[in-house]
Structure formats: C-alpha cells, structure tokens
Length: 167
Image (cartoon, rainbow, N blue to C red; front, side, top):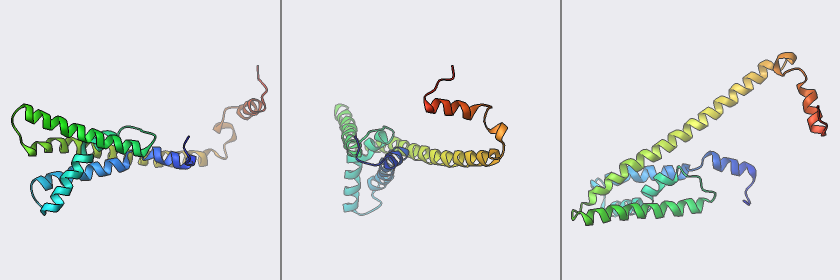
C-alpha cells in the first residue's frame, strides 16, 4: 500500500513518465552537441556520462508504468547501460570502433521521449476539454427534468442504494 493520498496517486499516474521523458529528451539533445564538440571539455564529459547512464533507458521507461519512481529510475539506468554495452559489443565484434555510433541511440531516444511528452500534453488537453464539455452539458440540462435522465432513473437508483431489488 502506498502512503500517499489518493489525490497524489492520481496526479502521479496522470503525469507518469514526465520526469523520465524530460531528462531523456535533454540528454538526447545534448549528446550530439557534446560529440560534435560544441562546448567545453568538462561539460562534454558530464553530458556523455549522463547520457550513458540514463539516455536510452529513459526513452523506454517513460512509456512503462511502474508503481515506484525509484524502481523506474533504476530500470532506466540498467536499460541505458545495457543498450550502451550492446552497441559497444557490436562495434568490438565488427572490429570497427566509432564512438560517434552512439549517436544512433540518441535519435530514437529523443524521438521516444518527445512522443511521450506529446502524449502527456494531448492527454492533459483532452481531459480539460472533456471537463469543459461535461460542465457545458450539465449546465444546459440542469433545468430539463425530463430529458436529462430517463424516467424512473432516480427511483431505481434509490431502490438500489437502499438494498431493495426492483424485480
């Protein structure tokens, strides 16, 4: 059982993967800049190391629902290191080592994170729009007693709530 309140739980599921998607997108955008040497050496080292730790894993884990955020971040690190290891093993096996080949991970990772952010933005927009439509419908049907609900709706609901059957 979670110690968080239901409102917090609902908020977490509504924006599930937002933090992973943002970090993955930033790492995927900064990696090509670091590889192309567009900023100083210490920053490049930190950027490449950060992408190696979380880049590809964030791209996968931002789409996967996990109950605990710590577990999702740990899985993102494990998946990133596994993807980096597989790519490195493939380059060693092919006897053709090119560090810039890691840029092939950055493109799909960035697109995956961007897709998750777009999905979250669309979901948020749809929820707001649906809420506005429901409020509009409720306001327009508030005075209509015969058209808002089928006849006998309230009587049947009252019987069900009190435990009596209508059969």
